[in-house]
Image (cartoon, rainbow, N blue to C red; front, side, top):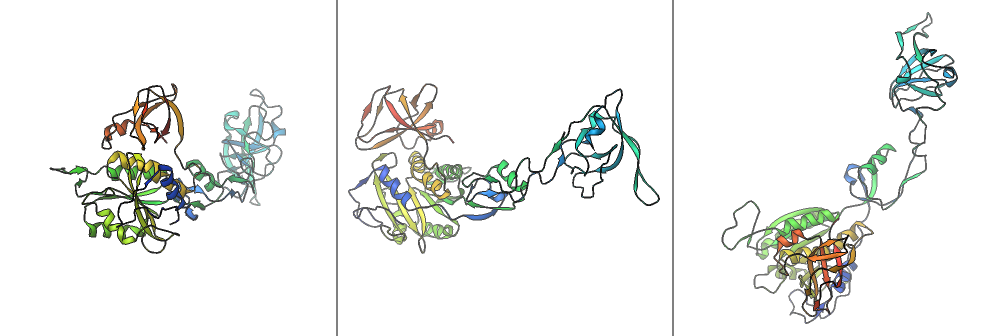
Length: 445
């Protein structure tokens, strides 16, 4: 792991450092340690939601041949110049052409071929008369002469003139061979995947979605659907953070609550390393007596340097979310791991500020950070000195205002669920009157 770790920073198993990192310092340090994942070739449906790693050019024209846009009759336009409902042009039907047909009849003067939508236009034909412009054809079909050549005993009456090229989709009218149809960086959604299939691409090179393993720690945690019991709470962090990782573009795997047992946590981490590009934990990063996360991460060494595995804990000048952990675990260069606080609001805000940018960086996305706007607060705000405060809020873009939601407590998940933004109060500000302009971090995708 690379980055600007301070030598006096608190390493795993070391005494607490007096240093407090700023939010910006910690974010820069985290982002310096990650990079976009190497591109891989994927089948089309597996590539949905991924970002193209290269320009895609069409090998052939699209459509690849002239074809009919209507059910009707392929014909020569000169044969319909004087056609009216009273005096229709009567043409001999020389064949039927279905979509996918390869053996096409030739259309000569006074002739037409019945054609289906999407079928190739036969040689000699210059336009297609929709079936609604005809009498639908009469007769018993096709016969053959003594030599086996087709002889038409069916006729069609065309009731109006047909212009040259009418109802024909020309070869290359959508895409020309050699065209760049999708540029590198394009996110592949349903229509983009359809285009790739249409030009014959079965696979595509993309920036893969990072695989993010999310686990929460704490012996007090009970899974939703189970009775909590005295002193127990339901695990919400792993659900919140797994959903947030998915929304950020990752392939997220949720691991249920891990008890405060060092051996158990160690075993879970070792088990998850094989499928993780990033691991996110919540809980166990404070100074509590039972915070086994620090004990376990001590196994991976102190401050990481030069891309090597290692781990460090630090305190930030922010509220909520002061305690944070960051480093790499596992063999070789290791897997990046961000250890977040256990309080639900602290965990989620820490995710938005630090983990989401990591995921977006791994994706190679241009929009690494959430958008920030300026708005006037509808209420007076207070903040502790020396801390960057992140308050939950509701943003009104029409009015240009933002309103706090709930209190400052890091356990208030009800208020968090109603918020669509974070109100930022700078470190050097302890109070702001209503109407003050503040930075607002928008949380909606």
